[in-house]
Image 1 (cartoon, helix red, strand yellow):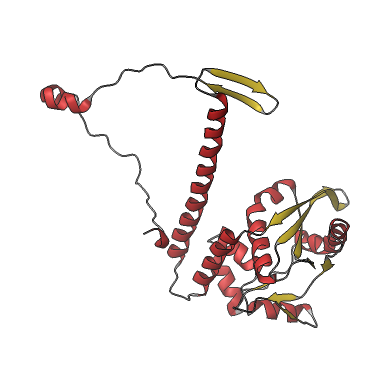
Image 2: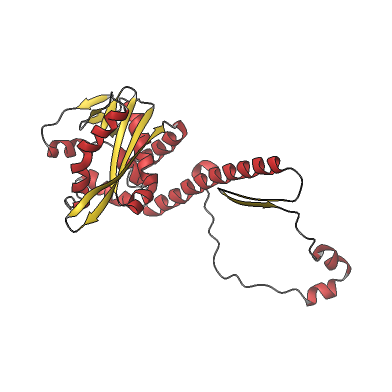
Length: 278
């Protein structure tokens, strides 16, 4: 890991334009619509919109939140330097760096923090990869509002482990972004659908594994249970009537033809196959 020195915020911003940062890759991974904006930022053609009041509040709260992180992991020290990976144009600026750990602090409304969770996870994984660390202390603080303005709310923390598969997905997205102007918005949208479908497939596998474990625990019997975490029932469905259409067409084609009709589709079918899925 290489640390870049800077003399001002303008220097820091200029340094970040030369690299794909953790913030960049988090937006590239979670928001296809951001690709055009980030490309403009890297080209120096994006307008300077300034920092919102929410961003200013988050920046003002960083020191207190990193200090809180130090009560959990004393080796963490505040960081404002751009950290650069030795093997590519990859960089990150974690809010804190410690012994084999980084720290990321976030403020926001309850709903805002929840909706940004996936983006924050991508950002933290990239930070761990760039810095060569194996864990990240994720500190969040709810941003409350009263007549006096923003005030600090509930504060929480958790440890996030490094995930090599996740990092590989982020690196693939970053390399696609760097592939140049040949990548259109349509290509980005296709990639986004494929990425999300891959995540959904993983969740579906986990869900089926959990259901199978529950079935095995219950056994082959009718069962119902209500407890502190919810209700479950396991029953054999009642028999239902069905028509053997194949046999009907073979033995009574006249009847099958009389009662067969074409249904009109209500909408088009969208199929997306990622480049890595064949």
